[in-house]
Length: 456
Ligand SMILES: Nc1ncnc2c1ncn2[C@@H]1O[C@H](COP(=O)(O)OP(=O)(O)OP(=O)(O)O)[C@@H](O)[C@H]1O
Ligand SMILES: [Mg+2]
Image 1 (tube, protein in one colour):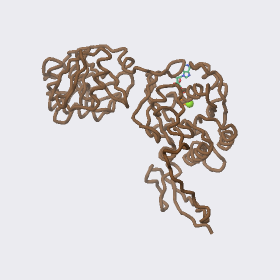
Image 2 (tube, protein in one colour):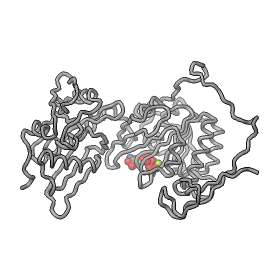
Image 3 (spheres, protein in one colour):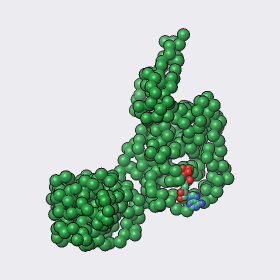
């Protein structure tokens, strides 16, 4: 008799346990852990797997073959293009533009590849209308409206496209799994079976996946380790910028981002993001510019601050595009090390354009923007501030300085404030101000130490 491997699994998050428990300790749901028995297949010795020697010199290994899409930003994130037979998970918030991106990609590639677009969410008519609206040359595309996983698998095996888009993986379901479409067991089954078919037939698959309110892909852990590449389309739905970010990539680095602009006629690639982020810049008190590095590129972004006396109760600290804890830390440093009294003031900090800054290199610019609005003095319009601020009020040097300075020069910036640590070679025409502390930076840039409390 087959030996049973016993395991208890949560139907919500897919976590596995050796014993039954009333509450899943991974996701916190009650009553979701149930027995799952998997009979282990008995295999004779003769059936043991065949071990081969990998030889990178052999001609059989198709080197680093990739399918470039012609969408440079997409190819950049993937490290040059789609690897044949790979599984790509494309996630993002509802309405952010996942279907648009996937359709543009499919249409673009269909000019010289065999592409199939499968939608479980929209009809042929709806997708046809979208295709018409998009600025793509290719106006014909193989399309299948289907939610039955087994039909999709059969179609893939039958038509063997080089690329198939599945929009979305959460809409697919099979009768073999008792739970409803979109549940973790269904999504996981769909992904595993698609993976089998894709690898066997060398079909590259783009699986579109929804992100839940908590920001997790449904069945996230269960899916992320199954697929080769995980991409997220991010952005603020009130702004036109979309950032395509690689979270996992078995065939390349994950630190590249692609920048797109959402327009009526689809997602347009943005070749020079700084120009777009600074397009509507207004120089006045409370505005500072910094340079952030994403992958191999440096962008300039504007950081705005607003400070008002608190009218009632606890002072508010609000950020958009910047980590709130980072702001709290900066405010503590500004108060203690630069004498800015902000304890009874509301502070708002915003990164313009819906861009999300995660680098500490933006600290100095945020601190200067706050000091600038408090003093009522504007920061010179052609100045870029780059540096991490430490708890001692010291300004620290950051990586990739050369790239950041080059970008600043390219956009016509003439002054840069930096840490006095480390060696820097400034490009011609850019004056470099080196500072040791955030207080020095404020002094140098705004002309004097701001000690008075705003509005008093
Ligand atoms: N007719 C239209 N004209 C202009 N822009 C449109 C039109 N229809 C949709 N859009 C834009 O496309 C966005 C939706 O894109 P898309 O359907 O690709 O998103 P999605 O991430 O696939 O959403 P979902 O999670 O609902 O599948 C909308 O937010 C809107 O900005
Ligand atoms: Mg969609």
